[in-house]
Length: 296
Image (cartoon, rainbow, N blue to C red; front, side, top):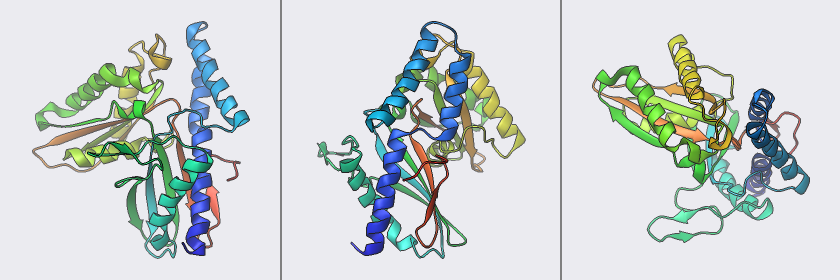
């Protein structure tokens, strides 16, 4: 391992340590808002327990949730960056190091062998999605995909005649059937495209967007709001108990589709939405964009 890879590995391990123990600013702010609006009684008790959990994670220096998930990275890298050739090894070794130091629960089980690697590294894991862009900057999104949040993940290709009503129905059917397993209030990502694999990837990218951001198309932004309002009118609240907020928000990402197909992907983030954004410069200095004021 070269000195540069070793240095980057240390940065990514510390980054994952923060992601596992502190929620990003937008999620904390949204939960604070939902707690303030929660009905007295059981709903308020549940939110109080969430904030107690967050405080204990910092006090005891432990992950917020024992299920620290399967680690995935969504990397936006400048094609002129000198760090680009070092990132894959550094990210992978960073997961291995954080597994020991944070610690992170061992969650990488090899397909067919059914063997837990004990390192959170396995076949194509950590999953790394690459977006190559002009310039020399690097931005890394880290996401800890827990088992409960992954259970409602689905994708389907509809006949185009189903329209956006069909998209909405699929989202609602998925959430009503499986959403309570993911520890509400939830952040819902919806991908709309022409094939299931594109829609699935977009739905995952959608839950990486900060709460409060909107789809760039005005109709898309309105569709996000309609879905969120509808889901929050179901009477499902925190941890699946009766309440006012089933979701923290709904984000939609889209790609142009084939005229003969309309695909939908759904991804879900639980209330403990372990996501982080790290911006890296060429000299390996960095800025933690998702957790302002927090040092690695």
